[in-house]
Amino acid sequence: MTITAPQQKLNTFLDESKASGFLDAEFAAFMDDRDPLKALRNEFVIPKKGEIAPGSDNPEDTCIYFCGNSLGLLPKAVARYVKEELEVWGEGAVNSHFNHRFGRPWVRIEETVQEQSARVVGAKKDEVAIMNTLTSNLHTLFAAFYTPTQDRHKVLIESKAFPSDHYAVESQIRWHGLDPRESLICQEPRAGEVLLRTEDILETIEKHGHEIAVVCFSGIQFYTGQYFEMEKITKAAQAKGCIVGWDLAHAAGNVPVQLHDWNVDFACWCSYKYLNSGPGGIAGIFVHERHAKDLGRNRLAGWWGHDKVTRFDMVNVFKPMEGAAGFQHSNPSVLTTSALLGSLSVFEQTTMAEMRQKSYLLTGYLYHLLTTEFSKDVLEIITPAEPEHRGAQLSLVFKRGKMMEVFEGLAKRGIIGDERKPDVIRIAPTPLYTRFEDVRQFVVELKKLVAELY
Image (cartoon, rainbow, N blue to C red; front, top):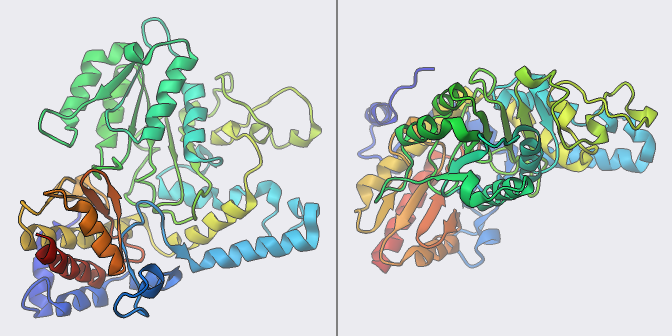
């Protein structure tokens, strides 16, 4: 997909809007009016400023929500789907596993979100299973795909991986009686830099690939917002005989990924960030179809991964299903799966390509305003400047120890991002429900705060 450079396109729109500058309300209104996804905002419950920040001006206005990278907003459809499951539970109790008034028998509830989830991550339906939570799934996949030998026992991750990933990988290494000090390679950025360079990752793979069992990175780095070059890294690692897995917590529903076409071995993701399934929502896994018939691969087995035809025969001889489904453990939570179904019903109204188009412009607009309205002695953006190397999130470093004051000042104005100590505020204009006017208002209010604090 070819995408016009965001800055070039914004300049074109500025000329068409007849606004005097990007910070004019007229420009943001022009962009919102032309937004092909604008109606999707109405599919979400957006808190009011008075609910988020009591005492703020204009309490009946909706808040400005830039925290979808941590917890997505509530899709209105979720209430309907969950309410229906509560009704069925009340009416049919255990019988609803097989007889379901709304056609979603609980014994197959995960199938209601399997195909839609596969589309989001660029997979075939049978390569995806909806199950468990993120770190549990990472453990499940490592149990199957991390098979260290004397010569090939190392795991390559980024040095600033999300702590839960780091803990999980270290514990998997120890589980095999190995020492993380010997078997864990943490890719560091260059001295004085924050981002990881693809060429440095590839150099590490080239140098150590013969002793690396698994390469496991995040699709998008949670702190910096860097979108790793997944296809390049996957190809290079597999060429050296490594298994390649990805944690898509900040990528699923944010950027287009093509797990099948990129030949990724395995991946996992949560669904409560850009996928908006609610706090603690059910997660997902991907296992490439190349491994679908590898039924002899050791795995942490559970009865929901057993062949559907004989699952209820209660015979204690495990026969895994082919594909990702064979890695399932217990029957999934009906309520959290139904909440995910409610969110995916919004995704069904668009495509990841269309969302990416809007995200390029929306995040590009934010990037332009921040780099033109503020000096680098106030804030600096550590997220990559190149749009293809980032998603919806920009990570802003606030100088002179002012980050928490800025964060609290924004919160009092009904503007919600999130902070990462010591000095970063993450701002994520999620394309499903964020307006260009939200971005503009954020920058206007931030300018007022900076004038007060600096």
